Image (cartoon, rainbow, N blue to C red; front, side, top):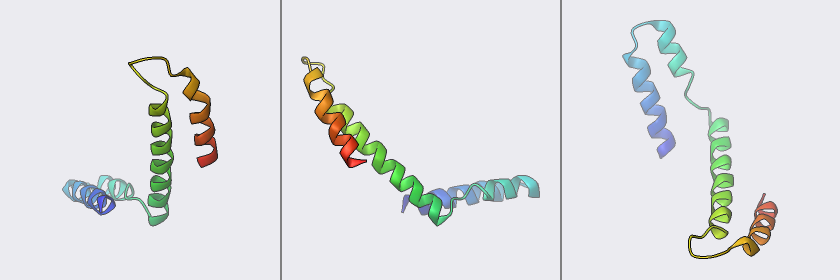
Amino acid sequence: IIMQDIDIFVYQIALAKKEQDEHQKLLNLQLTDEEWLHVIMLLRLLTKAEYMQQSFSSDCGPTTHLTLPALEALHKAW
């Protein structure tokens, strides 16, 4: 759903441009289905990385011993 919202947003901005060249450049920013798949894969990858980073971050005490297992889990997921 957010993909459609972003495409609509880009389209509406493009419509507001009076010059054809600017209008076309903005329309070219709309992502293809294949590009959206790449975005989704990147988001999944970054989500896993963030989760692993959070697993060995703490304000309460030492967590260095959790670093290697978290990185191994991340490597396995990738």
